[in-house]
Length: 419
Image (cartoon, rainbow, N blue to C red; front, side, top):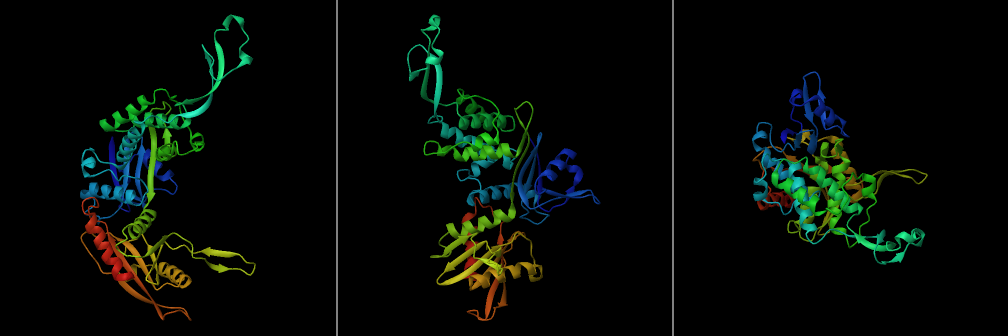
């Protein structure tokens, strides 16, 4: 499988992609690229993942490194992205280590996702495929359930008894979804061991009808304690089908899109660090994406402009607002005034003792102190100023091999600003 790697905001000549590939990137909502027709360049936007168009994977990776460094660090950036997806619970890759990654030639995110999907599904199916109770109408040689007397009228065939009974069958919508998707994916992957796993799953589900399944049918699947272990596989199958164009031969994905907004991933990753690594802020209560009220109301009683900070942290009787901004800043002048006004409104409403703005550090190998500003508090506030810090989180570490070092540096930044 041919793979081309692009990086957020890094301009590349438009002719590196075919016309069909450019159109596929533009059709996404929102568009994954901006086209500069005057210069003949395209600029990937801040969404990362994989777009498959026919026989080529277009991989969009986060711009963690400065422009001169990103090409040679492509594999590290991709591994770090998978770690962030796992830790933020976008996609579970927890059992995938460096050894697994090194076995995959021409490393790309889509191949990894399919590999994990196939590996875990095969392990889950080892017990036995999910069987569902359904009413079965079948002609048998002996009575089972009750006789369907409406069809038991021909004296010449009295030895063949039409029966109606409740039976457990593997041929249900859940299994049909899994078999169909594995059949399609087997025509997409380039790695032999992933292909083998997918084909084995198709064979293991031999008693299941192999036929196209649409999103509406998948939405109708009901989960219970008997089949809840298959829910992650069905959700991912739905994503595969929902973001794909299937070829007329029903044996391959013509197009496939798996992309994530980096603003959302950055926010979820920081929130996960603060909530999971409890030793950073012992005893802290961390709240993510929760409303603190509205900025305005009307005389008619309506509320407008809901305020939802990225993260709130309550610790030792103090309250803090933490907001993530997936933007590049070098100095204080790069901080947008609209972001500061937003934080001021949040802090005033919440009664915050401090504010922390967190940005990604796009410069490799640099640990920087947070910038401090003192915002004038509104009249009657509990303090005369509200301290606001702007700090950077470094992502040039190998998050698989240097996780503890990364978290320690993040902890140092948090402790210097919130404690």
